[in-house]
Image (cartoon, rainbow, N blue to C red; front, side, top):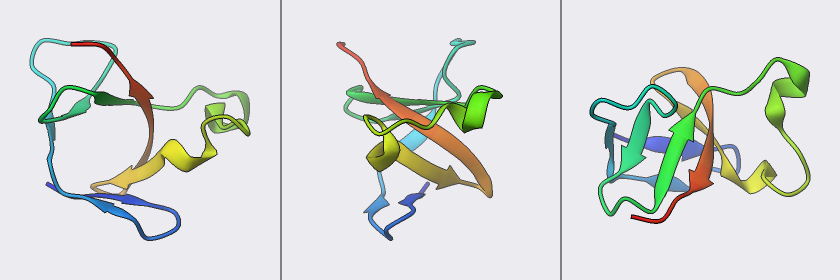
Length: 67
């Protein structure tokens, strides 16, 4: 599955997270997980604007997680 960032960077190793309610998609290496943005301005801030991705037509925010 492909995640596409607003500046056209592609991430190919995205898969659905198993049994996780907070995150819907994860990278296969487990370093980045994607969740739906909050209602407040989509949850986008200066700090995470580079982590906004479109996955299957919906906007997600990628967060770095330790696994």
